[in-house]
Every structure is written in C-alpha cells, then in structure tokens.
Amino acid sequence: MLTQIYNGKILTPEGWIEGGSVIVDGSRISAVTRSSRIIPQADKTVDARGMYVLPGGIELHCHGGGGSDFMEGTTEAFRTAALTHLRHGTTAIFPTLSSASTAMMDAACQACQQLMHEPDTTIMGLHFEGPYFNPRKAGAQMPDAIRTPDPAEYTHFVEDYDCVRRWDVAPELPGAVEMGRYITRKGVIAAIGHTAAEFPEVRAAYAAGYSLATHFYNGMPGFHNVREYKHAGTVESIYLMDRMSVEMICDGIHVPPTILQLIHRMKGVELTALVTDALAVTDSDSEKAFDPRVIIEDGVCKLSDRSALAGSIATMDRLIRTAVTEADIPLPDAVRMASETPARIMGIYDRKGSIQRGKDADLLIMNDDMRLKAVFSLGKRVED
Image (tube, rainbow, N blue to C red; front, side, top):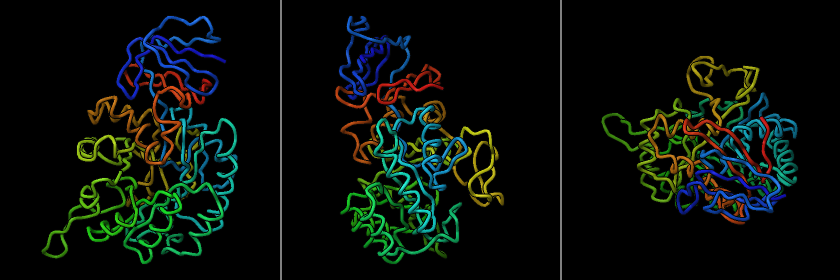
C-alpha cells in the first residue's frame, strides 16, 4: 500500500518543507518530497490542507490512560492505555510502573514483553519509576513499596527480561551508584528521580552512568539552606552536568510555563524531552485512579490531602500545544523535544523520531492552533 500525504508543511531534520509530500510504503517512509503533485502509483492520498506534518510523539513517562493503569500488569490494561495515548499522538511509548512489589513488577514485565514484540506495536519497553527512592521525596509514590537497591532484585529484572529499558533511582541511596554502573552496562537508561541528592551525589551518579533526570523540578529539591549555609539542590546540580538529559512534564501545571521556558533555554532541545506523566484517568470517563489516594482537581492529579501532585491528565498533543502557546517555545523545538530527543535518549532514533526516508511512518497532522487532526502509526491512520 502506497500512501501519499501531500500539501503539508513538513518538519524534517533539515527544516520545513512547504507544500511537500510524505510518501509511505507500507509501514515506512519511502520518500519526502517538495512537491504536492499526486504520484500515479499512490493507492491512497491524504490532503494535509497546508497544515503541519510532524513526527509522532515518543512518550518516556506515562502510567496509564483510558481508565487503565500499567500497574495492573495485564496485556488488556497495557493495550488500552497505549491506544488511548496513540489517539492523541503518542506513536511510541515506554510504559511506566511506579514503585511496586516484586510480584507486580514481574507481572508488568510479562505483559510488556509480550506486547512489545507484536506487529504494529507502539510499546517499546518498560520504565521502572522506583522502587528505590528517598522516602522524604516519595511524592505520590506508594510509600510501602519504597526500598533501597537490592542487587538480587534488580539483576533479576535486567537479566530475566528483555523489556526493561529505563530505571529511576535516588542516587544518594546505599548501592545506587553500583546499580547505575550495572544497569547502564546492560543497556538500561539510569535516571535520577524522587531524590534529595545534592551536588556530590549527583556528580557521582553522573560519573556512574546516570544520564537522565526524571520529571525535572518535581520530586527533587532546588537551591536551599542548611542552617545558615546555602546549598545547591538536585536541580542546580543537574544543570551543571553538561550532558545529562532531562524530561519535563509539559502540562503547564507540574512546572510553570516560565520554568518550562527556562529548562528549554538552559538544557536545550537536544537534552530536553517532553513527557505527560499521565495517569489512568487520562481521557477516561472515570475519575477513579489506580491509587485510591489520588483525586483530580484543577486539571491535574493530586493526593487527596493536597500534599503533592500525583501525575497528569495530559496527552502528547497537549504537551506540544502547552510548550508553544504557554511557554513560548518555537514549534520545531517543541516537536523535536516530543519526538527526536526522546528517541535519541532511548536509542530508537534509527527508526523513529523524525520524518526521514526509511524510518517508521509515525506521523501527526496538526493545525495552526496546535490541535491534532490526524495520527498515523506505522503508516496506518489511527481512528478516533
């Protein structure tokens, strides 16, 4: 099946192509041209009507959607949540599991491992957000599940499954540096999260292979006093790690638009990824979260005692829209932070993350108001 998406404003790694076409052969991009002339061999044509044609979004941090949470550990829950976010522009996803028991982690690995090897899947691998966190920075994590790094446990998950792609750890915990060295040798991204680490701990983690900061500014301290003396917090320490990437929840609530703008300016496009940190209640008829402590209020998920934010109800299209319309981030930068940068972080840029010949045909069409008009996943149009 040869499909031509024509008359679009196409974002490529070389810049915009005005009034061009993307030619899709099956699941792959076969050509990107500067012409909107319909090719005679096209089986199907899609008129982009002058709108933006963009690479599909890649989600690094998402707990669920459509009423399903990845914590459920079932293929049904994984499928529902992934499809929910696909409809909103997430064409590749790394499902996130919050701090959990070993049994729950095993169940999630088994479900993920099955689905990530299916044809046409959007599931790329599993992200463990915990359980090795600082209890003082637990936020909405399940407090009873939080523990210190256990080599027998984490080696089991890394050695016995091929789906584990990322693991978030508080680097100040005993054994965290050693864990970072081990998992990065095995090809797993080590990330800093839910931490009270100061500069020495962050520097040691960076040297051990930790290369990403989890929901930057959330679950970590900034500049602060210890008695009468000033201390750099985790935030400032991460800024000082020249090649450490960050992810930012771009819903305009978890991090104010002014701080989104600051992260973009300080870390830059190549080191900043947009994430939703979305919970099961995202795009769902139900307001019941997997965690009974969680409520929805003011367009965001919170603990019912209002002590912490608990996740978002954002989707990929909203991330891009918020970055552009609220944080004044240029559209090409916002799109790259939603596609190219996360693809590079997770090592899948060879097939996803940009509109180029030979890559997977994961494409979005958005209008001038940053509203999503069409999603293509592996060359197939996704129905609403």
